[in-house]
Amino acid sequence: MRPLAAAATAALAALLGSLAPAAAAAQESPSIQWTLDRDADAPREPGMVQLNVEYLSPGGGRSMNGRSVPLRELQGLSAAQLASAAGTQVRFRLRRDAGNFACEGWARQERGSGHCDFAADAGFAAELARRGIGRPTAAQQFSLALHDVGLGFADELGSQRYARPTVAELVRAGEHGAGLEFLRGMGSLGFRMGTVESLVRVRDHGVTPRYVRELAAVGIRGLGAEELVRLRDHGVSAAFVREMAALGYGGLDAGEMVRMRDHGVSAAFVREMRELGYAGLPAAQLVRLRDHGVTADFVRRANARAGARRPVEELVRLRSRGER
Image (cartoon, rainbow, N blue to C red; front, side, top):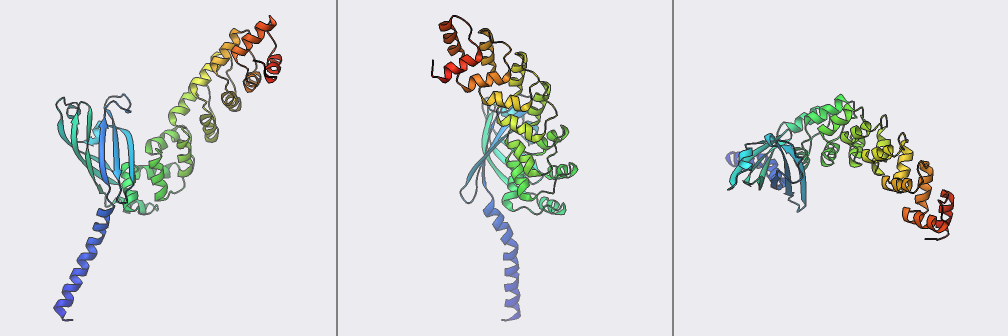
């Protein structure tokens, strides 16, 4: 091969090599659609909107993410544009550590829709690698940007002495709603789970800073994360604790509350039994009554037949024999 031809071939190879990453990134870039609603599921707080992003990956998978965000984060979109009665074209940017979303579309009467382009931040992967976490793939970086998991989250994990996460764990945290706000909120209440996996597990079971604070307000304090998960899994809410305390069942431990909730001992059942003359029954007796299918209607009929208020154990025996 002549020198000139060899040089041209080498130059072409170098050019193709430089274009390959860009081409791969373009192929991995998802198709992104957005919708926005001031009133749908967004908290009714000034300046908050509900942003839903639906994206179709090159492989054909379709996913949707929705979250409430401050309107100020949608740079270029004003409250006046969003409220336009006649409708108007809009453009805005959503900036994240992992990359930026450039969006355009249409807004009218507090709603909007359109499409977005995503551009990954070139320095983000290097920063994660510098922290010993690793470099995300293009798909992982898109997910981290979409769920707003950035360098602040990684640094907060370090501040709270969590085990160093992997990129996959960061992605999972974002996808499950265990981001920076959740991490800081739980940490401020003394819950530092030590691993991202444990943090995500607590979030998946519905234990949030709000839930912890609500329980504390009704006197349920000092429980560990696993105890809170158990309460949440069994439907023990602050409202349930408050209602039972008002009926004379305050100070129950976590196990007693779970048993009452699991066995169908509700505030309504306790009130009905009190009205029938069974006030102040121990929690264990209330559970026993519900376990044997004793309802308030059954108690009324049984007592009417006897012409007197039957003891709890007699009610249980009658119901166990199949009386109705």
